[in-house]
Length: 72
Ligand SMILES: [Zn+2]
Image: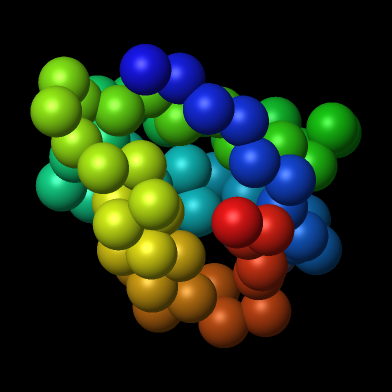
């Protein structure tokens, strides 16, 4: 399953940090952040609950870049 989320982040470098953090989160098969579009596309593992997984993704992203936001 794939979902797209609107994000807020100040630069491409931080966007990349968010992408790496999202990729490492359990339940995420792959994540791609598009800084120009301010979007994060997430592909979830089979059986994963996107809502629960995205809470963890948000937490992980805030850890690497506390100025970022993901609109869930
Ligand atoms: Zn930045």
